[in-house]
Length: 203
Image 1 (cartoon, rainbow, N blue to C red):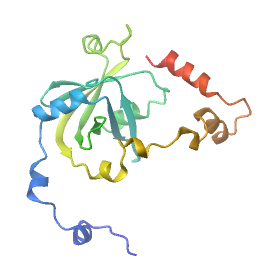
Image 2: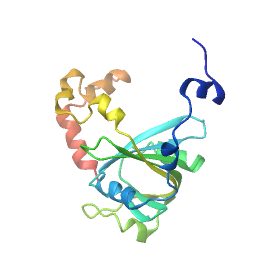
Image 3: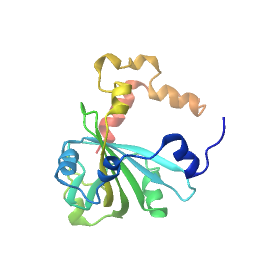
């Protein structure tokens, strides 16, 4: 086994992509991309920090929670989380972002790459009220690339197939996992308590 560390050796293994694969990459959001985003309740947002490490975080809400402002601009509200601020800190260090949009039941995904600004404009935040509360900030994403990704990964994984769902009991509740990971002597947070925390802090 040899380490592959040049583009030439990498292409020697995989060959060249087809013209169709290259040509499907757009520099803007066309009507199909806009529709896909409007139907998507979930995406994965990828960033890279000043330390060079990549990070990917899930974001989800109602379908279309990411707003298309125009053909080259998206707006993504930031809802309450754990205040680690990994993603936002990364964007301050390096504005490059990648977003993978998913739609339940669709095996295709939409990939969007570009750069992002963190904004707290009142008129922008006012576009995203939930239960009378506004996001603390909004990510404005300047789209450089957009393309639909084929279904192979979802077909292989059977992600949407009900028969492939795993019983939650295969792993301990999150509260117990965290207790063991940090060697905390306090009682583990029960699943009921965790659900109460989610309900209280969701928005």
